[in-house]
Amino acid sequence: MKQDHISVRGKIVDNETRCEHYHSERDVIAIKFYCCDTYYPCFLCHEETADHPVEVWPKEKYNHKAVLCGKCNSELTIKEYLRTKFICPYCKASYNEGCRRHYHLYFDELKTEK
Ligand SMILES: [Zn+2]
Ligand SMILES: [Zn+2]
Ligand SMILES: [Zn+2]
Image (cartoon, rainbow, N blue to C red):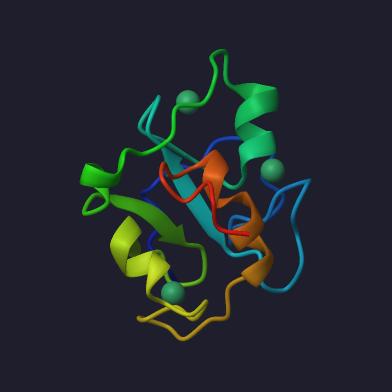
């Protein structure tokens, strides 16, 4: 039994934070949005179910916990997450590297990374 006290909104399809948009084996993280302090599995979930535009995390807030591992329910800080090499530091689950392409939708100052 895993604890499930952190609520994730959006179009979730299972209890490992996969959603209608991203649901491969490795799509197991949710990201907390700076604008509403709420976890969503992806930016599309936020776009389709939140009632406001996204605000990205400013760099000086990267020490806040804003990434949730859907496998073990650990929360990572943004800094921690960016250092993970796409493997959960707690349960060793693999994360989807494709998320990298969307960093600019969540985190400020990563816009230039391709
Ligand atoms: Zn929001
Ligand atoms: Zn989604
Ligand atoms: Zn984990």
